Length: 152
Image (tube, rainbow, N blue to C red; front, side):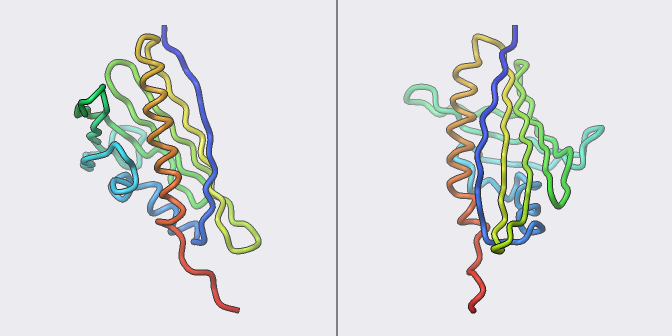
């Protein structure tokens, strides 16, 4: 029986929605920010996807870091929203729903909801790894997108 849970985070950056969209809708540009990713390869788009990728991570298992690959699809890439879905055997899915909103002070607010579904025996480990990796990504995302505030 599969289990499902979600977590959220918010990042603020001084950038345009187009700059954030370019980074968030392209996993190849996130490889240096995501702590588990070691390789991203674009593949032909799967049905219903704007773009598709095969991604290789190195997952910690005790003292080892084991490589694992999965498929990721960008389903929505709009100025105010990005949706990606990653699928890995056995029956593990990570859905990333990101909303972008410009705030009056020139800051872009990036709200992310990550939903993970996995078989019950794998769920605790998979959810813990996804949460840790995405929170590390979040801690690096603002700095990657920030540009200096305009001088008054």
